[in-house]
Length: 115
Length: 110
Image (tube, rainbow over all chains, first blue to last red):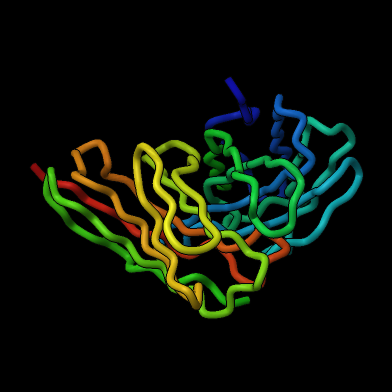
């Protein structure tokens, strides 16, 4: 059974803390994605990666960075967490492609609260 | 970036057919159209994908007109367990000029 796992389901952090969200996939997928999901706003792409050490900005990259040192792992980093980064964070992976021809497999999400 | 456009919410009753339409006027020539379903506290999961005309699988049908500027997800004979948020995605996230829309919250009542 294919799987995308995220390091935490729930996380509470303080303003100014550095936060790491980890995502691991076991499908040998080239593409990996980080989204945030907020009520009324749907899914918004933060960053994506199409290969090891490669990263591209999505729609809302400000305040975030990413790291992909190994093919199976894609990390989202909040350098200095702020309250407006309180959200649900979803990781996804897919086979390579640029036209959406391959489905994305999503993790269960991490609900981050920044106090 | 333009977004896909879907109705924010829809209501239905068990046993009815539900059609959810997504507008994507700026779809690129090579882009596929994919629909996802999301239950509370879970990540979205794939339902169906198409490029043109009609696609059918065991859970849904997808209708795409010739101009491909919209698509309609059809759920036959919905049940209470179909209550979820449905998203359409056009193209590949990050490459497409279109993004995930805000999704359609479908509520199925007895």
